Image (tube, helix red, strand yellow):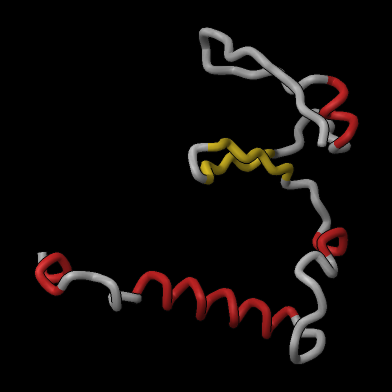
Length: 95
């Protein structure tokens, strides 16, 4: 695992080190997604081709899925996440 350091400017800007840009194949105009996970900043380039992620999670249990099936599964999971109140206290849910 490679590690780089950068300094936050007074304007809140960070320059991505050249070696990191080269390692991630980043070019001027590429977009980045910032996420906070357990207090850590995760920066993900949006220039990743989905084909590069093939097999990342292993072989699907029921064989390959179509894009439509994947979209439906993501929508169902996101919807259930929003509507899941199983662990909510009924007093809090009513508030």
